[in-house]
Length: 151
Image (cartoon, rainbow, N blue to C red; front, side):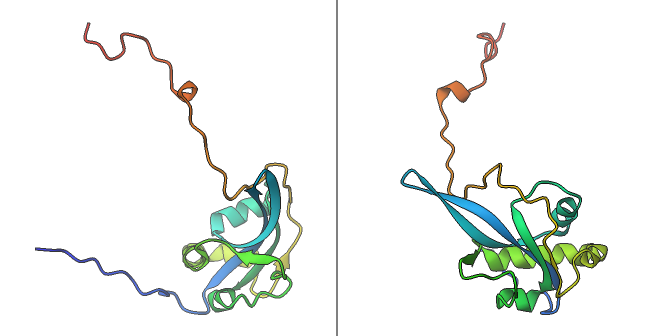
């Protein structure tokens, strides 16, 4: 017997669900150069609270909005000619909106239609989107030579 799994519909939340979208400064490495990008990303409620407490962040601006407006990229003062949505934008947007449903008090931090730019913006630690880790034998944990032997 074959079991099938049903996937939920693409948008299970109401269109007026609250969500915060941020404008982040990210970087791409291409042929030895590092290019700066402006990326629109949904922000979950727990991270929003951290950012507003002064944690250094790559977000230069935040916008409180609804799910429908964010999906349509109807975000005035946030969407610029160079800003682009992040990878998996729709999925991440809905996931972030769900976090505000479980913590409705977080929705008062950046009300719908308002923007916040008073953030601790920093690109000291660059967010590189296409970075790859190179693992070598030196990364292995050194173990005693008798670790896997029965004594």
